[in-house]
Amino acid sequence: MKRIICTVTNDLSFDQRMIRICTSLANAGYDVLLVGRKLKTSIPLINQAFRQKRFRLFFNKGKLFYLEYNLRLFFFLFFVKYDIVCSVDLDTLLPGYIVSKIKNKKTVYDAHEYFTEVPEVIERPMVKKIWEAVAAYIVPKVDAAYTVCESLADIFYEKYKTRFAVIRNVPFRNKIDFKLKKNDAPFILIYQGVLNEGRGLEELIGAMEKSKGVICWLAGEGDISNKLRNMVAKKGLQKKVLFLGRISPGKLKKITPQAHLGINLLKNKSLNYYYSLANKTFDYMQAGIPSICMDFPEYKKINKRWGAFFLLKKLDAETIAGALVFLKNNKEKYGEMKSNSIKAAEHFVWEKEEGKLLETFTKLDIY
Image 1 (cartoon, rainbow, N blue to C red):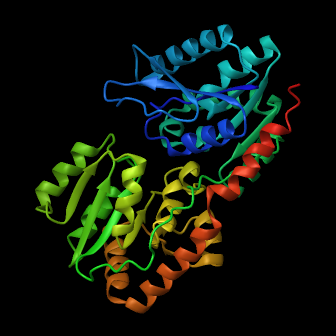
Image 2 (cartoon, rainbow, N blue to C red):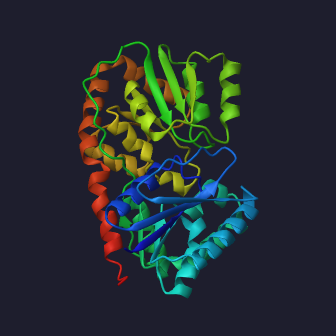
């Protein structure tokens, strides 16, 4: 049985994408280990079809975190047996590649995002240069690579002359009753994901002041959780904006279909955001609800074919509020988008993407 080690920098518990990927690989007969880190806020791990390991680090942010994590990962990989290391994003690629070269093993690069163009990197020129140098040196030499959308695959080929398979970050088919009736009032929005800068959450809360008969659920926590709670309290919106906290993937699948509309907003502050295709996009589809997204390339491509999104050209409270009021009051348009979302949900499922993942690994000459 071939051994695969997948490496990430999160705490594993809420990483639905890696849970899907590792489950598929394990079910295909690989011995899979997912490696991440343990935080003070981490919850106990749930048993999965694959093995899991978390490093407890002394540093958990900044340069020292990356240095410590990469050193820990280097020595761990050096002394453990494996056949393939799958490095998820650029911040775990360096130790995976170096150890694999030493041990004559295979390296797969999973580019979950445009790492050198995330806001935290582009705002620090020296850090950006370091990561760009790492990518320029290693990415052309990996044995296989894949990413989450066509736009990034094209960009990476242009930059590194490396072919990236496109394996979308979509969920398993969710078997729910799409005919379930929802009360017309209130009109419920749901945002699922981290509460971080750049996600349009401040603008969304501003829009709630202007949207009568609308309630917003925020499912998740993040760097600006306290800021958002203070903002809601200051505006007196405690009955309109509800913080659900961190919710397990299983529970979230039951909660999301109870909403009318999904929220998927991003500020156009980096190329990583501009070319993104968030997994929540497809989670909303599987829940049978349409969503509000940005008028960015990947969302425009999908909407041209499926018509499941209401696309925003501007990200401000007035524009968001206008979209919410329109969709709440225009039952015909909302019904059309909901129907389109249900149809798209049959297409964007992990059961269809899984084959491309397994093909990427079976093509490796590891025998």
